[in-house]
Amino acid sequence: MSGGDAMSTSNMLDGISVYESAFTKSEKTLYQYLKTNINDIIYMSVTELAERIEVGESTILRFCRKVGFTGYQDFKLNVAQHMGIHQNIEVENDKSLNQIIADALVNSIYKSSMLINQEDLRETVGMINSANRVLFYGVGSSGVAAEEAKNRFMRIGRKYDAFTDSHFMMMISSTLGPGDLVVAFTLSGGTKDVVDACRVATTYGAKVIAITSYLKSPITKYAEKTILTSGREGPMEGGSLYAKISQLYIIDLLFSYTAQADLEQSKEYMKRIAQSIADKSY
Image (cartoon, rainbow, N blue to C red):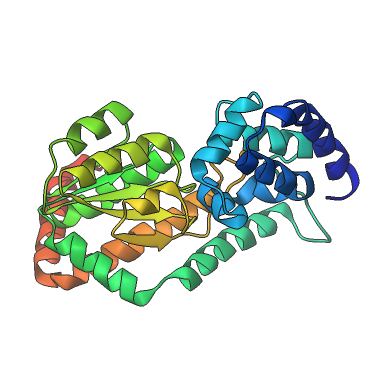
């Protein structure tokens, strides 16, 4: 840590130090790591942090609650606040703001394209095509991605649906079985409502594809395949357009490959849908 960041997060660490005598051996290992690397956790999942310092995820969650936070995300949010991290775009050099935003959006797509594993993509498309039902899950800003995925895929078949309410996700997950597929959108990979719903789905034999920015995150424990996006967000940066763009890129990629697998049938469905809404515009 350095400069103003070191000073502000040091104050936070001072507040945590009063609990040190109550820490277990594993919690002390975590605390020692935080004392020199606390700023690094902003873009780390709980799984990544656990592997970095070789402790269990439960240790991290217990530590966060012991020092006064509701969980790991709440802890990261407070770190970000102490660091003064906010969602903003500053004009640098002579670039106009519109050029900065345009460059960032293009870069988001480019980074996502570089993360694509072609073999995983091919197998994922195969799973989508062979599934009895394909359900898109997501909450918050990732719920928008789930709805957009449904909007795209329903144009080539009837087996696609989206769920963005935590209760409905759990309810439908309990009715799934072998042959059904969940495509889960969660940038952090640790959205509890989505992870819990996927856990239930796999309990009854359904398969899960995770669309996330973190290869090592809770959602990947239940995922048959993981497709990575470039849209990593800090706690103060939720809902960024750059993250959404990376998700939309993956949706369009999956849709295009899925449609090509049965191109004639896809064209027929798209023709029917176009005709069905032709009189809805002047």
